[in-house]
Image (cartoon, rainbow, N blue to C red; front, side):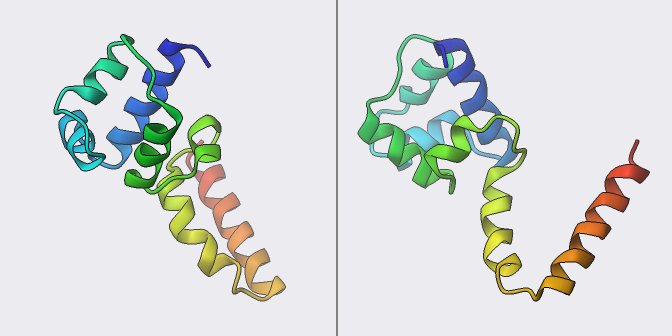
Length: 105
């Protein structure tokens, strides 16, 4: 993932969570313009700071690089409930999601 792709993905996730660059910068213990530097493709975060960004946005590093998953923070909230379902309940959820997606076409 190059700087442009990294910045695009970070911006996408922040928008999905209604977070500003300034807010995330300050919450991870950086200066107010830190995230803007990443979004403007001036820099990458260190690994340590990248993990803090992920934690602050309630996603995993895998979620960050998985560009096929929309709303990863929401998926992380849903999965613990899904894991408690019986097989027939999970199949019902699958059919429901499939029907919703097909009706949106």
